[in-house]
Image (cartoon, rainbow, N blue to C red; front, side, top):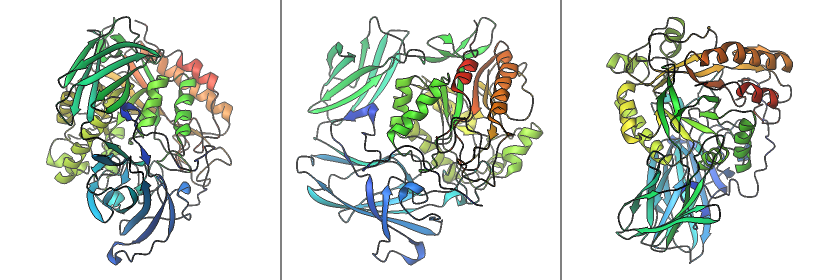
Length: 586
């Protein structure tokens, strides 16, 4: 298949993604290890001969344009990817505790620092870190990684990467694809904080994890004005707020907060908001925001870039996507089968874009009969809580099921303080789906403050098993489910496509659910789809829509913008006009 390497308009800069990577828990201690590393790709069976093959620009995968590697570079399941670099640290930086962070490495890696093994990790989409206090030193340090990536040949999470890309499945990538960085602290420091707003009691609540039994100083700021200052001896704090503003997409009000533990100062922020299920005046179950029915109008967002694949070329690129979606009048993004850098969630918090967060899918080889045809053509739903269901939905391996649940918990903890995160989505279209009823119950225990779309698309487990009736409809008429008291959401639809000459990854092989020849025809069709199909269903119980999608991805041409982000295909004003009609009149 002929492909074209497309560049986005965003500058990478001398050091890629150099901005502080964790705005939700920020401290004034940060050294980025993004930049040029040595690399080698060799057969696993050969071992490493000590010779590197060139330079790679981290955190870009070797398969993508921005890595600097030749076109066609691929790390196969039979290969090992070797990384190496040196870096220098000032003596003042090396303190009692030093943590080495990897925000994502695909998929299995081992790490050595100054010749000392500091840890191993499995999982290509979740962040991890190692305490390297015993290995780090002032002056020159040497870091080495060995990475292997079985892609879709195993039960591990592989999302939409495929060894045979095409249609809705994409080119495999591997190795480091999010930031690598170091922070250091004194022996007494704040390890973690959980932030929970409660608008019903007008309180903001904090749960602290500290390295020692010492008090925590808390300061809350509204802009430049301190509105609270106090000290707490225990592990929790509950603070009453007065005259505060609620956070919403229409008013994304954020309050800054600082915590001091010993000499350690951590800065964060929060928004006063509530996500819940509510019943409207007609008796329909709705998604609620701040105790009122609120219609979620969103886009499927796969987070792919033509030059960086899963990795954005810059922080400005992340911000551009969010602001572009907001300018079109959407109030939500469904982050599809990917965990973004934390700065993306910060932009959603700041701009006022609700987030539906998918868990990353895995499992062994998918059978189209079970993950697609039975549900879409025959409306037959596979029970996912027995051995037969496990096998049909590519989850026969208990190790894979356990690994998924562990990564689910890691993801929920990682994103727990994201203000805009409204909905968790554990499973999509049966891809590696299992025990969805039990897992939904477990997720509610972990996080009772957010909503859960248990089974997005199909293989629904029936009435009474979940809070949502979640549909993906691309070809069939849209009907409101009857005699089902769950919240009715259209979690994927649309996917209208058009060729955009000079901006296509695969000019001779495109995919779209409905393809148009002219931009005017595409715009007219989208307007008709919303006004004739979506708007009338809102009064009948429809509570959310997710149009496919933000941007083209490889051969998929469904995006409202091109893969390289250079062409917006549908007028912004038109989309804003359409979205203004998507409200619940209660």
